[in-house]
Length: 140
Image 1 (cartoon, rainbow, N blue to C red):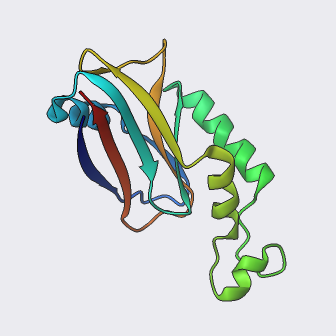
Image 2: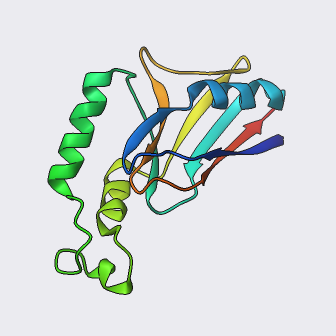
Image 3: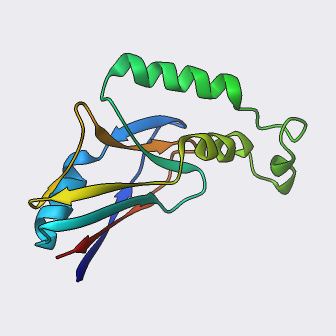
């Protein structure tokens, strides 16, 4: 078995946004030379997420609204105890927990093996600084 690892760096200017990283992950799979295996994609920051869904702008707006209802941005220490440490991103940790840390996609015939409409997204919940995403492809 062999493996191939890359790190993507994203710097999202908005506090919360979603970035389609499917093409960059597919490029890593192609560069790996692996024909059959698995591709792990994970956010390496506790205020960011990686998830799979449809690349439809209305859905993304729905997610943002829903997440903001569940864990509204509030920099004060009254709502989030985490903000008592001097941080202002207690909400971002909750949003990441809801949306997930990572995805694993099958690699078949040197390609990501998706269902219809599936795409890989990086979810940012405390933007405005560079963050990394790990892409690790393993297989034969």
